[in-house]
Figure 1: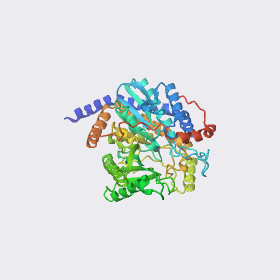
Figure 2: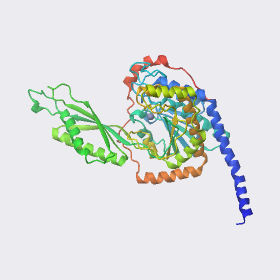
Figure 3: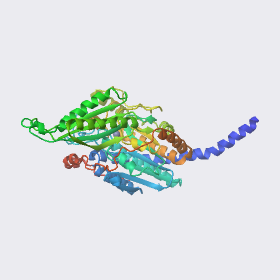
Length: 502
Ligand SMILES: [Zn+2]
């Protein structure tokens, strides 16, 4: 081809592409302006949820606030689906592509803490609180979905944007039920949203499969001294099950994890116990292996019952597939991460972070000033029930920098900063990346096709199966007594705000 003709083609191509590129930038700019304009509302939502401090399945105030906010923003909101009163699904638009944000808003027991105080200072002693920062998910997800709606309306984009706030993530208690109820059947892709110390995405398997079940043995009571030969000891069965599994450990893959607690070990020594109970968690790097170990565990229970002349029943408690994160979606999210960048931390915020790290006995590194580079995620041995969702629909992952590096979750230090300016700025950055990536998924059929093709290969290699027994129902009483105990004293700290997006 002549040089001029080639140049002509390039110019023609550039002229064709420019309006598209320009419009893509314009859409994202409108989304970013919407997020910036609503920064105070995002903080109000997330801070309100912090002070609600609600445990899994008891997220009543939290979901009431989110429902009100999203309905006022024009979303259709369903609360109570899949037989869980605090399961919230919201959506706007119609048809495909249908893109969902998946996240959670539950707190942790004993996490009550006065914000910004480096010393242990519960707001209500013993009460639950947000020592992982799930409160921040509420503001980020809602604001991002609202900004997507603004862009879809302005540019007449077809499709649907949805949010799934699943209850009780901390106890892996809801997602298998939400998946079973079919919520993701017509969803094209999801982005799983979680607070982090960094602005990051990633791909691959990010954590472990887990199966949690409670085994109860039933025997026959008798006097331990007078007629023990008439008794059948249910706690002996518990002990034998524990010993039996220890014999198995040597023959499991090095990747396995298994841990248990004895939840009923008898009453007093001179009563042969007719009830004994042991609660098990079995994990592995993939669900088929975790399930294989779990099936052996059930056989061991059978053997323990046989040896002791007892019977047993198994109650499903929870399960989670490892999260499978899609590389194509991760690459798109990474571009948005690089475009948005980490927040411009002030010197005061950096100094605060360093002082906090020092006081919490962590490496004094301050706040990250750069996003993480894209890469395969380290597979953590912990679990998240969102994993089930990621095996039925292509899933992306976004962590936004709203906590202080080195301060690990699930202990009170992590409850010091979820309502700080560091958290608020991290939430704004997270909402911007999230909205940009959803716009990518809504407007790029190529991206969705790539994500789907990748997902098809992976989900064919390891087809999804539900761990739920057919008659399993969600444990909606989970944490009820604990929450009822502390809620009256926690109410005095409620912010009583009614955030409305504009
Ligand atoms: Zn979490």
